[in-house]
View 1 (cartoon, chains in turn cyan, blue):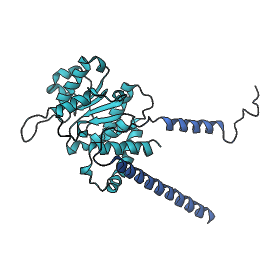
View 2: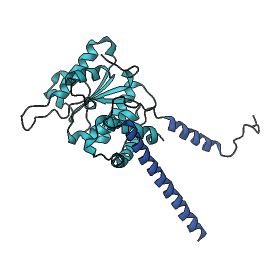
View 3: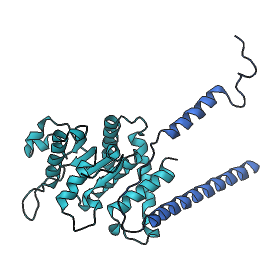
View 4: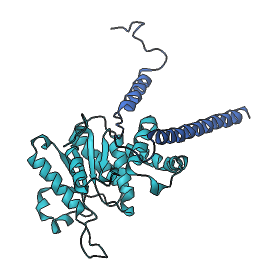
Length: 208
Length: 79
């Protein structure tokens, strides 16, 4: 297990779909994590193809005290007529890590689904968990993530959801200019690039 | 007990001072930003410079707008 010194308590692992439709929710969540003073991590950050994917995920889960698992896209694939089960699998690994690793018992997990109680139809064992909805609305996702981080981390200086979203809207307005200055198309920006742009923006302007 | 000269509010009223203090403390209610540690696909300095430039341009535009508004208001008063 490789954990960067001092990073575990300030790291949030995001386990979510990687499709284009989900991008607005994903980017809003990344922004909220950074503005709240945490680091966002995702399986998207690794570009090294020599690594085995599940090993990357195991490392990220172990290195993060906080995790967001979004099950809202656990639906039937129109081509194969099979559900996408990567997200529930990674949630299961995280729950196992929290249950069996004595140094990871303080992990905190936020689970999203598209509708209340829908998860009981495909993972009924999660019946005792508190599952949240974002309704595919970035504003709601920001509020939910912010409230969870505030409650679970105990940090008193995390701003309110409305203030964070207002900063996020400003950031979104300026992002195309940042991409233009980098001479890059939005589709060429990696998760690590986006994360750094968010952190710099928040540091320089967002908190002013 | 009568207020001594030194304890009297100077310049602005007590309420204004409290409001200013509250504004200052609300500015502090933002946690320190943690930068990502993972490598980016392009040099980090380029991303930081691009973000800084966009913010600087926006701030300059806002400043120019404020100045123009002030000039318009002064011209209206003079009329």
